[in-house]
Length: 79
Image 1 (cartoon, helix red, strand yellow):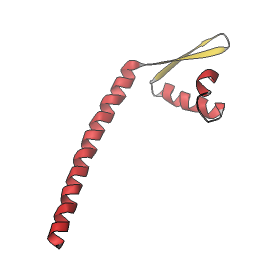
Image 2 (cartoon, helix red, strand yellow):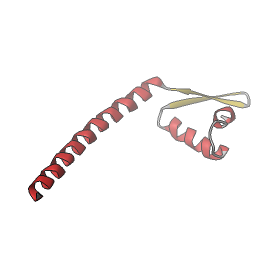
Image 3 (cartoon, helix red, strand yellow):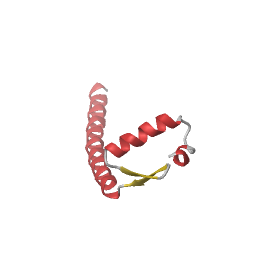
Image 4 (cartoon, helix red, strand yellow):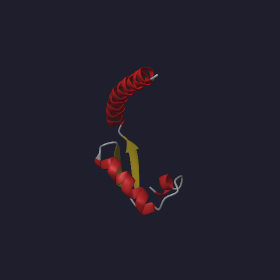
């Protein structure tokens, strides 16, 4: 964990908390080996997250497109 945390500007306890959240969500797995804790990504969970985020992006793009059309229509109606 210390080696991973060196690349980030945060305290080790804060970094550990972030790793715990990722582990609890299933995106990471950890195993203690002697005095070290090793982490690895869980690809299937990352794929699930990527799929969900892709769907959310599509939903919000559609909503923003509709909002843009509405605002443009309001501008034309006001002219």
